[in-house]
Length: 431
Image (tube, rainbow, N blue to C red; front, side, top):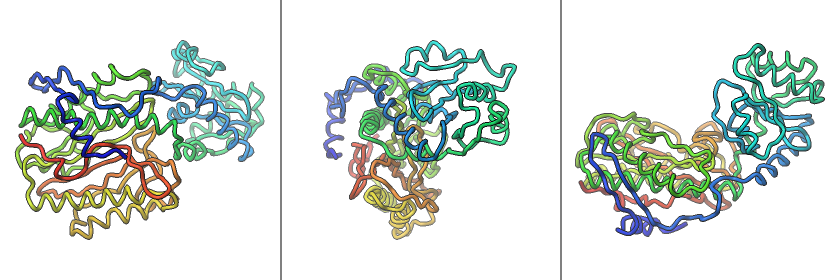
C-alpha cells in the first residue's frame, strides 16, 4: 500500500492540484486539475467482452452443478455482471438467458435494440414497449419455451408470486427453480480484472475528497450544498477528461455524497442543509466513485481548526475501530466477528452509546451489497471479497467522525484500496 502521508503531500503540492473557484451561491468550481500519478494506465476503464465470455462459462459450470437447463436473469446488476450489457433499468423487463452451453441471449425492450447491436451478445429478441398486450415477463418465458426449454428446469431469481405466475403462464411445463444466490455468490469474490477497475475508481474517489478539502480550505464558512456542488463539478470534469470508456460511470450531479459538519456530522446519513461551516466543527467528506460499473468509497473526517481533547478522544476511538476492521478482513474470518472486533474498540474507549451502525458492507456493482460486516452475518470471508470499512462514533451533542475505506480480503489482512491519509494530524483544516 502506498504511503498515505506521501499521497497527501503530493496532492497538496502546487503541481498536483490547483483550484480556481468562482464563489457564487453554489461555490461553483470552474476548473480543477490534478497531475498525481494514476494507479493504472490501461487502455480500458471497463471489463472487456473476453472477461464476460469467461464469466458466462463459469456460470454455466454452476448451472450444471445444480442440474439446471438454463438460468434466466432479470436483475439489472446480474445482467451486467454476466454479459456486460449496461443499460438503464426501468419498468421495462430486460433479461439474460444463460443456457448450459453456448452464448447467452438477451430479451430486451425495442428501444435497446440499437445499443445491443454494438455489444458482443448477438442473440436477442425484442418487444415493442411496456406494458404491451401481453405481460412482458410472460412474453420472455414464451420465447424461452420456443427455444426448446419449455419442459426444462429454469433457474430464476427470487421471483415474487405475481412474477412467478407470469413465468408459469409463459412456460407452463417448465420447472422454476429459485437460484437467486448463484450470481450473488459469484459476485462476492472479485478477480484481479475487477479489482483493477475498482482501483481506477478509487483514484477518482480519493480525488473527490481532496477536492472537497481544497474547496473548504479556500472558501471558509461554506454550506454543505456548496461543498457538494463544487466536488460534483470537479469529479465530472476530471472523469470526462481522463476516462477512456465512459460506460457504467456513476455521477449524481449536482449533489452526490454526504458532507455534514458540526452537530449534523452525528447524522450518519445527513441530507444537505444551509448551515455554514464554523471553526471547531467536525466535518465528514463522504464520497463514492463508480467506474466500469464498479463502486468504491472514500470517506474522511476532518477537524476545522485545532481539535479539542474531547474531539481527539472521539477521533482516536473511531480510527482504532477502523484500523481493527480493515486488519481483520482476512481469509477465513467470520463477518460478524470482524464487526465485533472493530466496534469493541469504540466501546472500550467509553463511547459505546455513540454507536449507530455496523462496521461495513459488501461493495462492487452495487454500493451496498452482501455480505455484511455486521452482527448476524456468519459468512466466512474469502480472498477477493470487497467491503467498506466504516465504523463511526456519533455524539449528538457535539458531532461525529467516520472514515470509510474500500478493503479487499487477503490471506493475512485486508488490503486497503484508498490512498488518502487517515491520521488526525493530516485531517485538520484551517479556515
